[in-house]
Image (tube, rainbow, N blue to C red; front, side, top):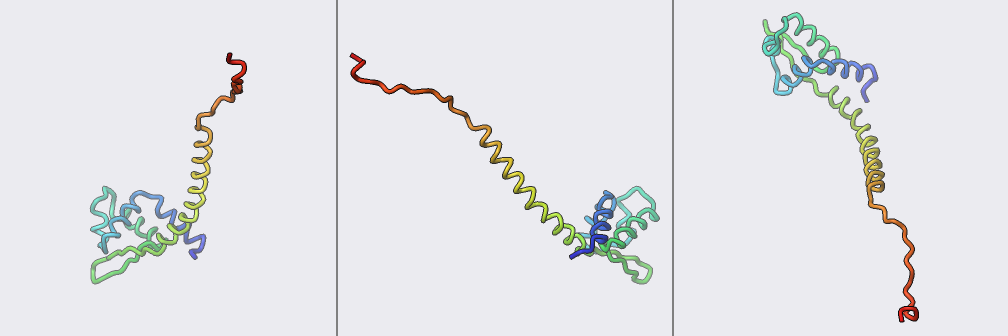
Length: 125
């Protein structure tokens, strides 16, 4: 199981849309820092700071090949976060099922209670 600090680091890293976009790109395969920076209108040092946060959270691995700095996705922290969230899915599904049952019972048309008199054939004449 993932340490609470690791889980916090994962969620903190995922809180930024630029970092999520970087992870989306890395899910397609390894990329250089320049390739990762291309779609963004921010400086290379800013991209490097985002990459540092992702690396510290264990979400990416960085390696240097000659003059190239390459990044790849490490899916393990994402799987741990998904497993943590999944435990709450069961909780919420049970709550939603209970709410649905309640609403169905409240929305059923209620029959007015009336007293039905039995006909007495002797009185019909």
